[in-house]
Every structure is written in C-alpha cells, then in structure tokens.
Length: 520
Image (cartoon, rainbow, N blue to C red; front, side, top):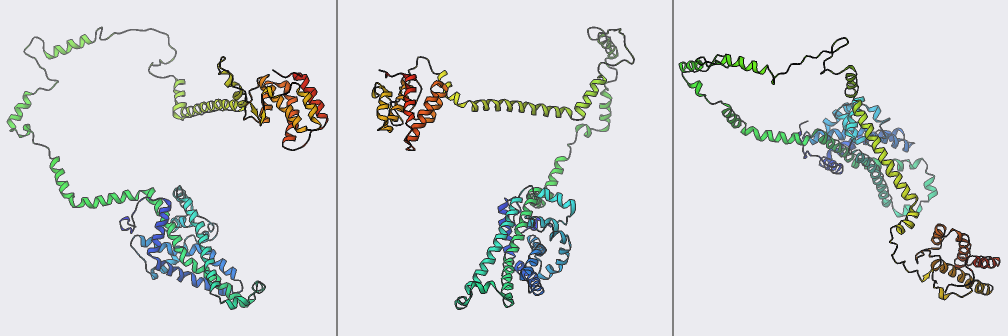
C-alpha cells in the first residue's frame, strides 16, 4: 500500500464526513461491487431456497446469517480500488477462498451481532490480526468514531427493511385490481403449498435490496477505519513530507554543492607561512609551564612559590583542630545517617512522597467541599427564616414602615370599614347570610393582624403564607387562625357551609383574643 497512489485526499475527517467518503468510494465502483455481490449471493440464495423450499423463512434466515462472510468480497474490491489497483471480477473471485478462510467461524457466531462489524472487518481482513493482537488493535481504533459505526449498522437495518417493504409495496401495486378483488384475508391466512413461490419471491426482493445497500455499508465502515488510521499514524503529515521530498529532488545537487562550499574551512595565515617561519614562531611562544622573567630579580618560579605561601596562610586558609569523643567509625558530616537514607529511599525511590502529596491534596479538596456543602445545606434548610429575618436585621431602625395593604384577597382591610362589635354583627348575620358573616369575621381578623399585631402581610400573600407568618411571629393566634381559615376556604372555594356550632366557637374565641371594641 502506497499512500501516494490513493485516489482520494488523505487528511483527518470527522466521522460523518468519513461515512460520506465511503458512499463516494462505493459509487465510483458501483458496477463492479453490485455485480460481484449479486454474482456471489444470488446463487447461494437459490441454493438455500431449493433445499428449504417448504420453509421459506428458514432459507432467508440462513442467507441472512452468513452475510458477514459475503461482506469480505466488497472490502477486497474497495481496498484495492482506493490505491489504484482495481481488481477484475475473475481476480476478486480467485481471492475469495483465501478471504473466507480467516476467522470465519467467529464471524458467524459470537461476532455476528456486533454493531461495529463494518469497522472491525478491515482489522481482520487487511491487517490479518487475531487473538489478543486484534483486541488491542480494536481498543486503540475504537477510542473514537465507535458511535458512528454503530449508527451505521442501525441505519443499515432500517434501510434494508425500508427497501424490502418498498419493493413489496411496489409488487402489490403491480397486481391487477381484478385479482385483488377476489382475494380475502381468510384465503391469505390459509395459504397452501401453491403459494410458497410468493414467499420465496418476497425473500428475493430482500436479497436484491442487499445488492444495493451492502456495498455502501462495507465501504462506509472501511472509510471510518481509514480515517482512524489517518489520525493515529499521521498519514497526512507523511504525505506532506513525501511531496516535499519530491520537490527537493530537483534542487538537491545544487544544495549539496552550496553546503560543501560553506563547510570548507578558510586557509590560516600560520598554515600559509613557510616552514622556517613556523619553527621560529613555535620557538618564540613559550608554554604556560616554561620559566619566564629569567633576567629579573623575581623569576616566574619564585613568584609562584611566594603566591602559594600567601594563600596557605590566614586569612585565605584557617586551620582548626577539633577533639571530640566518637563511637565506632567516624561519620562524615556530608554523609546522611542511616535513618535519613532509609526515609529518602522510602519517599523518593518508591514514589510514596508523590502518593502522600496526592492524598493530602484529595483530603484538602474533600474538606473544602464538605465545608461548602454544609454552608449550602444550612442556607437551604433555613431559607424561610433567612428570607423573613435577614432583611429586617439589615433594615435601618428609623426607616419608615411600608404602608399596610388596603385590600387582601379582594377584602377591605381598613379598620373604618368594620363594625364596632364584630362578633355581635357576625352572630346577627350568621343564620341568614353565613357567607357574609364568615367573610366579615375573616376580614376583621386580617385587619387586626395588619393594624394591631403589625404582621407584615402583603397583597401577594396567600392564606397558607399568612398562617406561616403567624407560626413564626404570633404563635398564640395559630389555632384560631387555622380554624377560621379552614372554614373560610371551605365556604369560599368549596361552597360548604360551616356547622352551626362554629358560630359560637369562633365568636367566643374572638372576644377572648381581641375583645368587642374595634380600633378607632
């Protein structure tokens, strides 16, 4: 396989673009692929039908079960055609026995229902891998594009069924209407042996549908396989270097000549001098170890000795004698003790230090997560309390109180609209107008909560929210409020009158809580 002979552009593609490329490959060799598939499968289908003529479904099932073996012929044609070696029909069928010989049993048993069959087939047939090598290769290849291979199989199943049903519908349309008028469902359900040809003919329509779809299915799986190898093995980069090599072949001699000229060293003046001058030059240049300054009082050797004596004396060198007790062999200060060496081997050599670092980091993350989780849980658990009281804590003490709403639930809350003796008026209206009496009592109760008890009611509050505020700020009124609210809701929304005993109970409890005088 030479990448330069490929009939398509070698570059990394997305999975769906690779599937489109497989359709293009199948279309280029559509005639050869479809004709070879038909030449292989139609005789086999005829053989199964003749052997199992009395069982058409069994013949179709056997033909469908061996379909993974038929797919090896289209893969052989597509893989050769991609690199310019288009095989002939004769050559394809000559290679077929060798293609079927490898791992045929596993292909029709435990690998039969694999959704990535088209993606795995090139590893088996082209790379000729089996066993653990095949498994490791598939693990590497299936790190990407596996979902596309599965969806290709799922879409193929639906497409095969659609083509088959469409062909059956077309066959039904071609039946004369006079013949259809004579058929009944009872006759169709009790078909005898004379109608077996019809079932075999419908099976033939499925086989013909595979002639159209199976080459596309195999070519698409092969294109997904090629795309993964292109990404993993960098085929596009290799092709770029090969093209660059082809371009440089024409100018390579000139480049080598230029480089050789640049690498020639220049001629030194000392090398160009005559031999006598070179000898004089060598004699005139003393080595660093030779004696110098011989005609002066301080020669070079005496100066070196004097410098060595000065460096051996303070402040350049200070000698100190230390006397101490020691046990056993003396241990140099620069050498670590046996415990330090052991700890160093344990921490650095075995990687425990890195493990301790990871554990410490994990514990730190866990502690911070627990802290933030507890804070979040506290805020969520006491969200109602925070909503009610936190705003009051931050509200300035001298800020004016928001005006109380004049209307709640469609009821007038102003004290001026209430009678002087609320329970007396309720008792007077209860027998003839129970709705007005209970509404007056509930309205008066809300007005007292607003103007006397300073309960922060809003026009958007519901009856349940009013009870919730009472439980938090006025717990002594909760029992009366729940009884009154229950009767009011039953009457207002359920149209159920309260019992006659409720009048006495509600009015008596009102006089205990609020008295009989209304607020002026």
